[in-house]
Image (tube, rainbow, N blue to C red):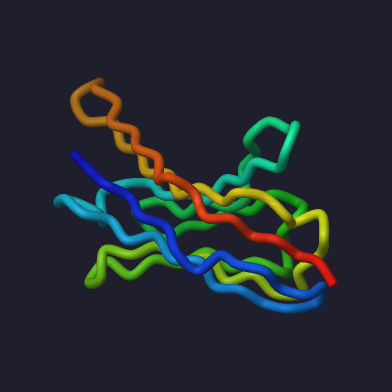
Length: 119
């Protein structure tokens, strides 16, 4: 069982920055593919960025060149550095972890952290 707890959200002005963190409990953090997703009011949840167990990253077009996903296996923590934030980045941001072992899918979500970009 893995528990994911996000932090670091808040209110920021356009052009500002935030760093989200996702602390993971349980073992084998380094074996999970991790990601950040977000959901704005009235919209479906969408991918923001992912980082696999090997450290390879991929970003949605909306965050390329502005967002950086990283992980620290020693601290069992996933990060999302967000720069030059825009009002359209306003959403609840969720941490996600997934791995498949012997054809069994293990998938977990955090409770989310609110990011509001407004002047």
